[in-house]
Structures are given as structure tokens and as C-alpha cells.
Length: 343
Ligand SMILES: CC(C)(COP(=O)(O)OP(=O)(O)OC[C@H]1O[C@@H](n2cnc3c(N)ncnc32)[C@H](O)[C@@H]1OP(=O)(O)O)[C@@H](O)C(=O)NCCC(=O)NCCS
Image 1: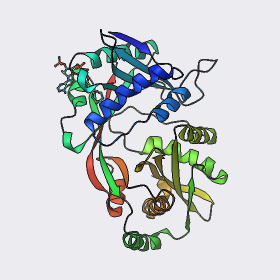
Image 2: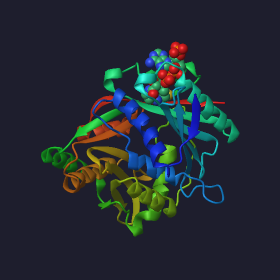
Image 3: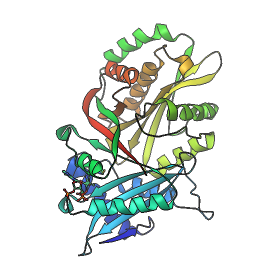
Image 4: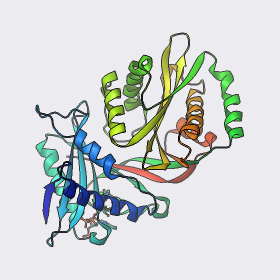
């Protein structure tokens, strides 16, 4: 077999790499495309090293393509090395074409990833994947990860919310929350966090990296500033995505103290992905998590009428977030699993 780096400028090879990713994804989750060529290309371009060796973005990203002895592209990986923080770790994803499994290709690509991890002087590897409901407890990644010495360190449950949510449900929920949230104002935006909130958004991004339950994963505090927020927004646009945000602002101090965001792939706007949601510790207990989500769902229905579903993943231990989601009407639909191996 041969393993090559994929240059995201090389259309033909990138298309072969993406075809493997897509075929693997659709095999596990028929009818639910999740990765898109433009989206992956933009990510890989963003992760290229600049003249000084560091990427412009937050991670160095490499795409690897494995060809079998007949020259067929059969396995693909994306390998990421955070450079702003978490420089002890790498993250990767592996996809083996459904017609070429159980022939050792996944293991061969993983061996190359392990080599590169050691070469980069990093020790912690993380790999994750969705386990759709029809494969509950038996996604191939489980046996593969186990065989290669990875430990399942974070179990999340996926929940979906059907859109549009009946307006009466949102109204009743909002009425129940409002009395607890005196002194807070809710604001929404699309694609660009307002200038007067962007520094606070960075503070919340840092807090998110430590407060969202991460199980046994060795994920450490992230470095965030306004430039990182803007960079991520620019990358989102390059990935052919739109995103919507909603925040609670503490009226007295003028500070943004809670937020929630969702991402929409323009080519496939029916399934919306819930991104992050956080309330600063000193402002918890005011139902702000629910109120920002209500505002966002209403905005989403108005601005992206094609949207049919919002998907979210929560750690099984994250009782407060799960309670908010269940109140909104989210229903369980599969799982999301993260494994870790420390070299
Ligand atoms: C998980 C995946 C990458 C494995 O790729 P692969 O090329 O089939 O894996 P390998 O042939 O190298 O398998 C190595 C070992 O893992 C275990 N394994 C892999 N797939 C398995 C399965 N479906 N059932 C049971 N054990 C499995 C076996 O122990 C296997 O050794 P064996 O074939 O000698 O018994 C592939 O199934 C895939 O692309 N799945 C969808 C994407 C995904 O889940 N990626 C995350 C990877 S952790």
C-alpha cells in the first residue's frame, strides 16, 4: 500500500480522498451526508503551514490517502495538531471505504498517524465518531479502537429537534423562564458576532473549553481572543457554512454572559448542527441557557426556512444541558463517542 499527503490545491487527489470519506460516512449513516468537499477543502487550506511553519488558523491539518496494491484509493484520514493550545495532543479521523474493510488498511493508516504524532513530539491521540442508533453498541470504530489500545473516554448522546418547533411550546417555555431572567437582554446575530460582544465571546470560548464535560479526555484550557473568533467566522464562511448566534447580555454590566450557536451547511441546510452553548458560572440559575436557545430556534426558522432538524451532542453526565434540550423537545437519536490513547 502507499500513503500520500493530499495537497488541498490538487483537485484530483482531493476528490479521491473526499470520495472515500463520503462513501464511509454514507455507509454508516445512509441518507445523512455530513462532510462536504468545499467544507473539507477550506479546513485543509486553513491548516496548511505558513512561511514560518505555523498555520494561519488554530490547527495544522493534514489529509492522508492510502491506496491499495492496485492503486485504488481505499482509506482516508484527517489529522490535526492544535497550535494555539493543547500542544500535547492530536486529533484524527479515519475512513475506510466500505468495500475495503477488514484488510488492515485502517491499521496501516493509524500506524502512519502514530509515527507522525511521535515525530511532532505529541503524546495524546483522540479520535471520535458518531454511532447511529441502528448501530448502537456496535459501530466498527469500537472494536478497532479497542484493538489499537484506545480507551473510550467520552460518551455523548445525540439528540435531534424537529423544526419548526410548535410556537406555543416555545412561548410557554419562555413564559416559564422569563421571571428568572430579570435584568438580562437577549440578542441574536448571523455569521458575525457584533463588534461590541466579540471580546466577551472570546472569554466564553475559553470558558467553554474547560466547562463542557470532556470525560477522561485530556483537553486543556484553550487560548481565545477576538481575532480567534473572527478567524473562525471567516473559516466558517470559506467552508460554505452560515452560523447563527444568540446571547444573553447582563444589562447592568453590559457583558455577554451566555451564548449559543448553530452551524448550517449551505449545500445541505436541512440538518443544522448545534455548536456551543455556555452560561458563565456566576450567571447560572437564571434560565439563560433555555432563553438563548429559544431565541436561536426562532431566528433559525425565520432565516433558514429549509432547516428541518437541529442535532446536538451532550455528554451523558451533562444533566443541566440535557434538561434544557429536553424542555425544548429534543429526542435521542444515537451517540457520539471519543477515544483517547496516550503514548
Ligand atoms: C473503523 C474503521 C476505520 C476500521 O478500518 P479497517 O481497515 O476495516 O480496520 P482494520 O482492517 O485495520 O482492522 C483492524 C482490527 O480492528 C478490529 N475491527 C475493525 N473493524 C471491525 C468490525 N467491523 N468488527 C469487529 N472488529 C473490527 C479487528 O480486530 C481488526 O482486526 P482483524 O480484522 O484482524 O480482526 C472502518 O470500519 C471505518 O472506516 N469505519 C467508519 C469510520 C470510523 O468509524 N472511523 C473512526 C475510526 S476509529
